[in-house]
Amino acid sequence: MTLVSVTARSNRQKSDQDPATWMPAPAVHCRYIGEWVATKHRCGLAVDQAEREALLGYAAGCPNANLAFERAS
Image (tube, rainbow, N blue to C red; front, side):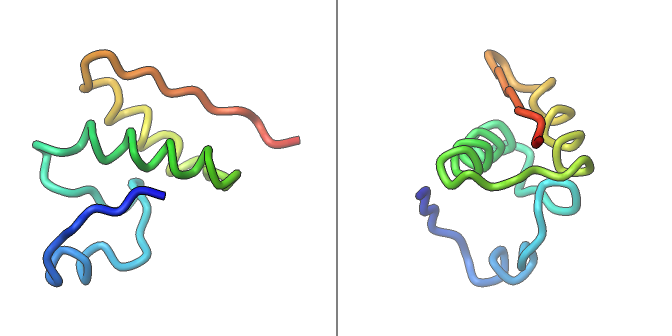
């Protein structure tokens, strides 16, 4: 798992939201989505359509970003 220290305020703002509805400060978007996708992959967790679209949209602004998603059967 990835553990990143954040302020209590930031943690409350994020709550249980995914990248479709919440993102941290723009300066860390690329790191955040990379860690988000890696964690989802490691744990075998699904990505819904809104989350997928948000991740791909943010990744478009990241140099050297390469996100791949597998379709669930």
